[in-house]
Image (cartoon, rainbow, N blue to C red):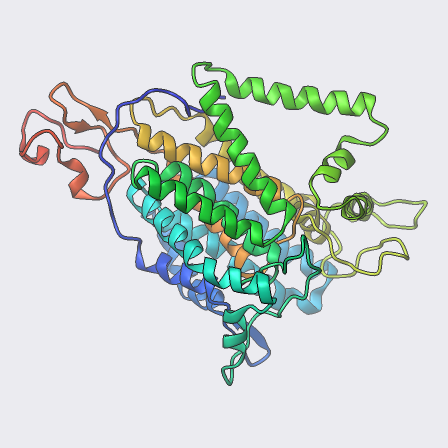
Length: 466
C-alpha cells in the first residue's frame, strides 16, 4: 500500500476552473430541501436533476466520453439490479417506487461525480463550492442551535404547494439544540460538514492563504459540531489524526502499513483482555452516552441475526435477498425500528450480495487510489490525501449512522468525484521550468510555464500533454 502523503515535492501551478453547470445544479438541489408531490410520487430537487441527467450520463459513460469503464461501474450497476430483484422478491408492492427513488439517487449521484469531476481543476472548484456552502450555513446553524428552528426548512414549508423535510425534534445535547439545517436529520448535516473539512484543510492548501484556510477549517468544524452527532465528530477527528500521522511519519514509506498493523494489534488486545467484544468497545467510544452505545450494540447483534437467521429466536435467514422494506425482528422492548448503521441496513434490505456489490465497488477504487504515487506533484498529492481521508471518514461514519434522501446521493457523488485519481498523471518540471506530463487538467492556462512568457504549446521542443 503506497499512499504518498508526506513527501517533499515541487509545487506546480494549479489551474483554476469553474464547476460544471450540472454539478452546480446538483449541489444547490442537495442544500435546498424542496419536496413536492407529483401524483403519488414524492419528488425532490435532487431527484429532478438526476432524472434529467442519469440517462445522458450513462450513455456517455458507456460511449467512453468519461474515461474507460472500471469494475466499479459494473459493480454499482449490479448493486442497483440486485436491489430491484431483492425488492421484487421481498416487497413487490413497493419495488417500483423504492428502487426508482433510491436507485436514481444512488447511481445518479455516483455518475454526477464520476462524469463531471474529471481533473484537478474541477475537483478544486468542487472543494471551493462546498467550503462556501458550509460557511454560508453557519449563521443559520447558530440560530437553530439557540432556538431549535431550522429557518430554511420552515420557509420552504410555508410556500403553498411545497413542503420540505420534517422538522426533527431531537433531544438537546450539552444544552444546545441539534442542528439539522436543510437535511432530514442533524446527523446528515454533521456528515456533510465532515466531508468538507479535509477538502478545505488539505486540498485547498495551495489555493487559500494560510489564515483563510485556518479560519475556514475552524468554521467548518464549528458547523459540524453544532449537529452534535458523535459519528460526524469522530469522522473529523479521524481525518485530523490521519493528517497528523502523515505529517509525523512523513519520512517512513511504510507508515500506512504500520498504522494498519497497530489497528490489528489493538483489535486483538481488546478481544483478548476485554469482557466485551471489540465492536461493543468501539461503540462505547463512538457515542455521546453509554445508553446509546448499549442500544447500538443490541441493534448490531439483532441485525446480524436478521441476516444470518437465528433458530432460537425463530428468525429465518435472509442472506440472499434480505427482508426488503419489511420490519425487522428485534427484542420486544425495542420500540423503534431505527437502525444506525448504513452497511448493516444495506445487507438487511438487499441481502449480502447487495452489500458485497456496493462495498467491493468502493474498496476497489479506494485501494487503487491509495496505491498511486504522484511524486513531484504536491498539489495532486494533497488532492489524493483529501479524497482518501474523506472516504475513510465517510466509511467510518456510515457504521454509526444511516443515510437517506439528499445526503445518501451526496455520499456517492463524493465517491464518484475521486475516480479520476485512478488515472491521473502528476505534473513535473522540465529543466527550463516548464510544466510537463499532465493529462488530468483541461484548462489551457495550466499549460503555461510561470517562469517564461512563452506558452509551451507554441514551443516545438516541449511535447504536448496527452
